[in-house]
View (cartoon, rainbow, N blue to C red):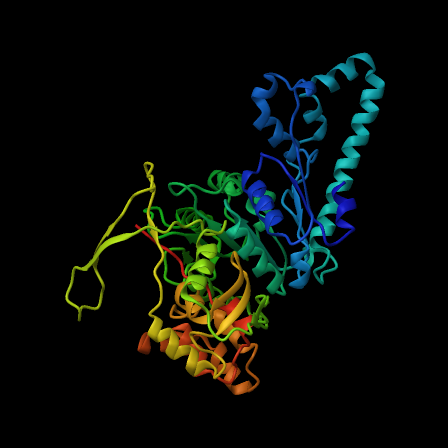
Length: 502
């Protein structure tokens, strides 16, 4: 059924199972975000299957066995990836760890068939085993056949990931797409340890819980810990860890793999890279620093950056001015939308707790808690907003067509109607945040002067400007004013203001 729906090309398709809960979550998120029909098929054991030995009490093990034996493959087909020039088919279970015939022996319906008609059961069992292996070969080709290698073994760099929420998997796949020496990105558990022996491997590893290894990297790490034989000469590796430095066990899973690889004699090409979700620019800052070193280490040119920009649906309104009540109504739609779900509450007091000239702003804020309910472990997130005067100065300097009272028709972020640019840039868009390298790459798309383009794309210039003047997104847009992205692209490029958690 999945293959049939994939032939329509505009339908999101996924095959999921609770054996891989992160994949289930990822599939449902992607299906929800897909602009079109979605078809998600899930493996769900039934009481009629007579699962042995404990019936549906063994449901999780039954699901895991179904996936490991190839009886139920996990995959996602995302049409959005076609627009980005990527393979839309992602195979999330790439390795047969168990025999499907052993899986069939767990269910009463197949046991009864073998008792009643042993010859028929043997014949059908052998046929299913062949079909499962043939289907896996077909799915592997579908997932990896778009790369320009005659065979997977022709690739000289192996890319692996251990991912709990899908972030490390996404980063690894983006890297594999960009690296001309790699074939595809695989979960660590989808490869044997011998597969990395004698090769160059780049690993992207997230950390979950209290320093735990993600589920799809545990078997690989266990095998690594058990191994006593040193790796062959020529075994090289690099590790990029993803985590949050506000936790004590920051990037512990990545550090554990790094330590074991070194212990077994593998050569480390680069020091451990770390992407910190708590950093001001998020994990992207550490990721870009790591990638800047990866390409020289692999002795390949960095890929040409042509970032995908999806323009926001926005047009200028014929109205010259908007009442403040109309702006408030539009902003309420944004803050109460499904993606934000914020609530407006009254501020009782807001007192500065330090000298005005101090370089940090400490405040004591008293809030009316009416209607706010807290559970153990909850945090309060408060949305800041930009200085309206600074917003006005930026809008006037960026374009003669822009002003704080300029009215636009916007269809994005839960807003479906008119709003002023002043309200949009003050309360929604983080125009005075730090520009990321990804933002600069998007900005360079609109720059026609080649020398200026090189300056925009040079990461050292961005770091230097950030240290000297604390350059903001607004500063970058005004400094490279000739690039001048049009409003639909500009709104897509500027990140949204993030709430501060307390």
